[in-house]
Image (cartoon, rainbow, N blue to C red):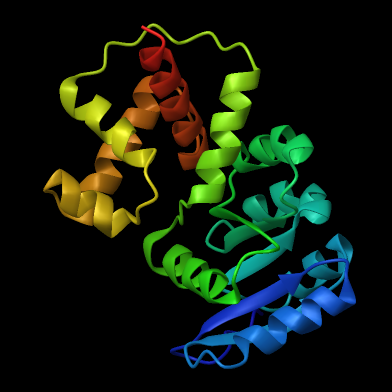
Length: 218
């Protein structure tokens, strides 16, 4: 039976193969009154073993451990996953591929710890945290690959939603800009993904980037 930790706190697992990084991240998050690091884990097997008996709200997952991502999504669909990776343009294609497989945010390891805390809070409360680094990765991949744009007939509201998704804004900020509440925004995103045959929010972000690039060339 799974144990729920510390009611009222966002429980976090740091899963990374580098002990010094795990220690540094734990220290950085230790001062956050609403966040509790419940485990530091160095490999995928240990992570899955831990999750078989314990529960966490958010996993900070090293890109080198993404081989367990599908299993986490299958067994623990409610746990939010924030991918941690190196800021290397040669790595962007593989980062984008992982983003489309169902993570909830992606951050560079060089980012300010305050923004990692912000990402943890946002994925926990809103489901996804889109940031400038993710937009940069997707834009780079879109520009360096050939893409066949689906023949879709999007209306003005749907195109506006795609445009807003390309911006570095939270779900609440996008909803406010669009003049709707967050729940309505989520419903609109779900309908748009179904219409486009896209499974994840990250896939929708990639499509939005493709649309932006296509329109800029016209």
